[in-house]
Amino acid sequence: MMVTSAGGHLAQLLPLEDWWRTHTRSWVTFRRPEVEAALASEAVTWCYYPTTRNIPNAIRNLFLAWPTLRRDRPDVVVSVGAGVSVPFFVVARLLRIPTVYIECFDRITMPTLSGRICYPLSDIFCVQWEEQLRYYPDAVNIGPVL
Image 1 (tube, helix red, strand yellow):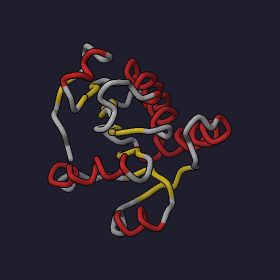
Image 2 (cartoon, helix red, strand yellow):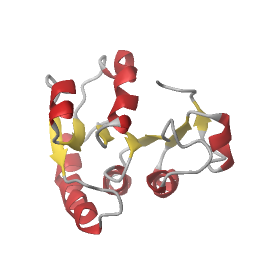
Image 3 (tube, rainbow, N blue to C red):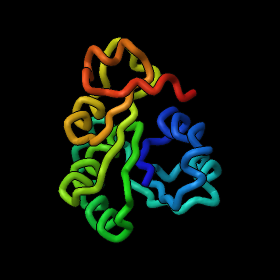
Image 4 (cartoon, helix red, strand yellow):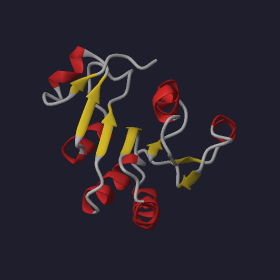
């Protein structure tokens, strides 16, 4: 299951298509015209947005995550953030579903809020720059995905 915000976050998962295309998958993201176009042939659960520091939508997404993850029972939850990743990682942890978080490409000198929250919830935490290891010492540097 790919859980991501729209825009640049989704743009960082799309280049990994050679990997995710070979697996049965579903997506959780925002219902926006550009996202609907990019994921037209994909199974998508539409989450609540905006998510950045929006407590009511974080709670709504938490209540969305529980039935979605219980129903789909993915082998892994993968996210590049942002806010929608947090409730899905919390529920995935409770359901013992492995998680992989990829810290954002453009946050080199300062960690993201969702990255800081998801770091202890992640089975594998990936960074795209050597400098990001300063904040996430147990992360795996996968290099830039864009």
